[in-house]
Amino acid sequence: MSTPFLTDAEVAELCAPLRRGAAQARYIRERLGVPVQLKPNGRPLVSRLVLERVLAGMPSNQLLALRDSQTGPEPDSEAFLRYLSQRRKR
Image 1 (cartoon, one colour):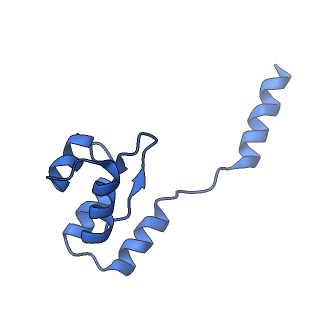
Image 2 (cartoon, one colour; image 1 turned 180 degrees about the vertical axis):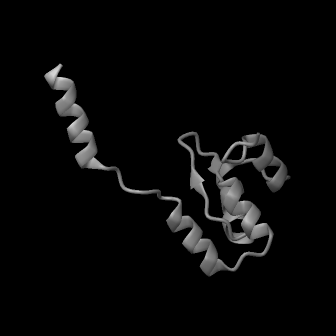
Image 3 (cartoon, helix red, strand yellow; image 1 turned 90 degrees about the horizontal axis):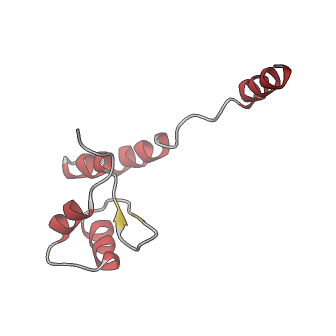
């Protein structure tokens, strides 16, 4: 099973011969057109799903919709409060 994000080794292979995290992130963002975040250690964080879709030729408007859909649903705060109140009664 593959991870949701590329490993550092996969990023290095994708960006060879670039070695620095900032250079790799710039290459992935500007040359490949893939949105990139940076990890705390400065290495690029690249979504495997988004990279595969970009390399398969997905139009950019669909890519933006995909990015927005990955934020996920909002938490159910009422259910959480009910859960907490039930725990206090015990």
